[in-house]
Image (cartoon, rainbow, N blue to C red; front, side):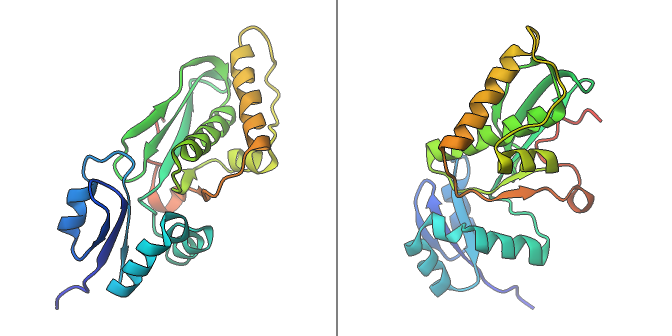
Length: 206
């Protein structure tokens, strides 16, 4: 039995439009950094989505339904994570394309910080980057705490602010200020580690 055909919309790629097979779609997105595309079950639906634009196709309602109902990874997304040698300890974070783990950004190494701080900064970094480049990708994190901090626009930490941590706290202050002064339509999602394994941005130091 042949598999059901799909149609592919490319909003950002070498060429944009509706494509009737994966091979033609792949030619437009392969090696194109920031490519945005999505599959649809009918040609009519694909053309309608292409006309509606990226924001509608990647709306929070559509993505929530897809993610929660089917427990599937949204591969056209960004994943972020942080690593800390000790907690607190030397801290860094990064963001990657979920689909292929290509690094989008990687922070400097802070002399002292906590994992939660790194996870928070990574989320805000991804949001700011998406807003700057007008990207509507959902963003995955495996940190419930970081999600709460972004939602509340404030952090909770017992880490002392001193000469060793001052630069980190300055960046945290800037992140909070960005959240206070900006809006975003990217969907922030909890990575389901127990189902999917480690998040693609994981540093692999466990």
